[in-house]
Length: 244
Length: 170
Image 1: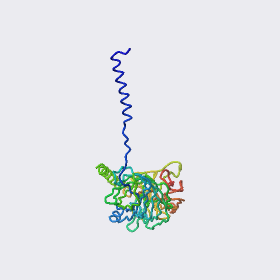
Image 2: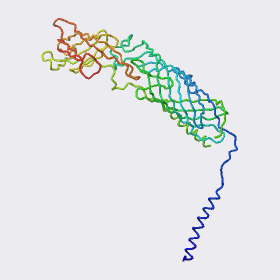
Image 3: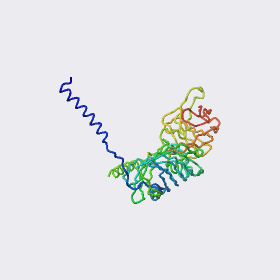
Image 4: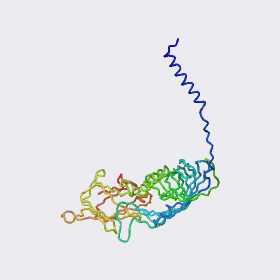
């Protein structure tokens, strides 16, 4: 026989169970019905790098331009490409060398930013393979001896002014890109990105090395890495709209 | 608002990275980089060829150039530069060069050092260097006036500064 107290406990738990079952059955059907029109724009975005224009204007040793494009293929994925042309004169203590040529970078961008309805901004990460064909001219150089023992007022023993030109050089690299694009006005975007680059294949001039690779940047004596940046202004040519 | 906050943060990050990349490490040729080697001459005793013998009050001058190296203390080995854009360097080696100490009179011998210089790229900071191959020597004879009795090429290729390249017996 159940005592009164035990009966109350039993009823208490049974009621919880039953109310639970009832609650489950009453769970409202909340399948959202999207009544908003499609807002996600798909299309080709074309732009230029402003940073390279500014650098060309302020730095006499540099000239270059870059055109960039991306195409939204699926949700947050974009095919991205840049083409450009650059030349840089490096006037170092012991070497004066100029590199110039063209490059292309090809890869993908992934947008990590969740936009509010109707907005098309992006904070993205990307991967590229870059390839450059270029020429390099060694204008003059010094033989490093650590002494000026044989220098006379009219003859610098270790200075060489006879130039050396190497043509048809190539280099390839991979790069990781991080950046953002903000829609300032309708279909007009302002963007900024930084990239970390690493040389993967390179053809050096005989008895020398590449000191500037268009699209990659300056090379240095202590690593295969380089960083770069671009500031872009671009225009989106919308092809169609899709729902999220 | 969240977007603008993120944009501000990222823009700040970008400008910091931008600043970092623009203040690049100075390309200065490091002290320990192997650049153009000096010629190492070691002075030996002519009578006992296994012994070193320091020349007294040695002075070194390259023919046609003003600079003079005077060794204040006597040394058994000297490091001297070679011309980089010529196929030979002529040295005037003078012993007892101090004319005010009342000792022996100065005696100058001329040796021609011939070689095949080869230019090699080192780095963007150091530029190029020269190594000297096929080292040869010739002592200008002065009858019995030569203080140098014999010269032996020990290392025909001057590529580093670890061992003596030339032995001079006197």
